[in-house]
Image (cartoon, rainbow, N blue to C red):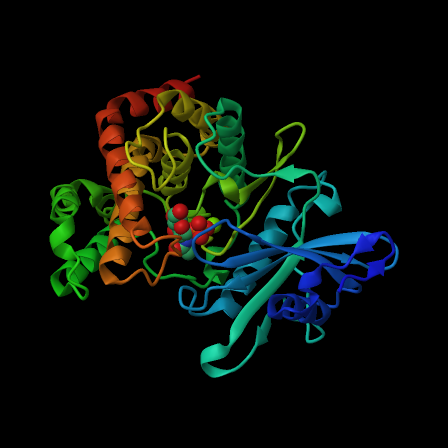
Length: 382
Ligand code: GN1
Ligand code: MG
């Protein structure tokens, strides 16, 4: 079945549905050439991403094609508009970054940076952007201090670059996204409903979340009292959302701007700590804080932000790490209790494993709360 195109072999998958769909999508985004390779990228729990390579008669060109999860993002058109505005703003401050190492969303004939295919129940929302050459990203706790330091630098710089961005232009892509108190209310309401009878088997985990409900609501109270400034933040600061230069580890671009909206700096700070300054994967038991990696990230992040963060914000960083970890534990457990509709799972109890891993990590973070605070202040005072 394979036919030669120049030096490349057309994959035999050419007749399968995914191949045909991706070919069609590339054409709609006005990409010239034949699709020669595609690969599902097993990253993220929400959207579905493919790497594609096309041969245009002269060279091989590479892109990422993504299906946005419409169940999670109710208004993806507004979300794409957010992304467009934020990308333009950030890139206007990155004058030295080469064009081919920036992120570009391609447009259709209608001038949209997205494509809707199918109708009714079957409609799908797609987007396509360039594959940044010679870049790498880090999927999980890498154990590498330099990766953490560079990640801190990248996310610190990002919140700095957005300081003068007019947040009123943004539509909240997911309302109450990091409103921990609201997340916990939703969680306990679902525990009450117990739609699948799973609550009995996770009584211990639920109890632990209940005991920490007040603790995890502190940041919400501080916002209400006007003690913490709301900034434009990324809100999903896992290290796999940064593309680094493969050779130098310099951060190039921040991707996955889907949840970029008004928020707290400490949730951004905390979410990288949760994901990468720890000893295990997000769904692995026995997860603990790695204080050495915490320090490396804090050096990168605080180094970029100490000048403009308020004292309350500096005081909230370590609490942010604890809070977002408990928030994620409740979100994963909520999804397990209500039938795994939100986060993609590879096996039936994965959301439960994720919740348990996050609870293990939360406990370890709480034990190190003072130590984390001291490190933040030590760095800020330099
Ligand atoms: C989801 O799909 P991904 O991995 O980029 C989630 C984040 C969670 C994260 C946990 C829109 O992000 O909030 O922190 O999983 N994104 C959304 O790994 O809910
Ligand atoms: Mg993401």
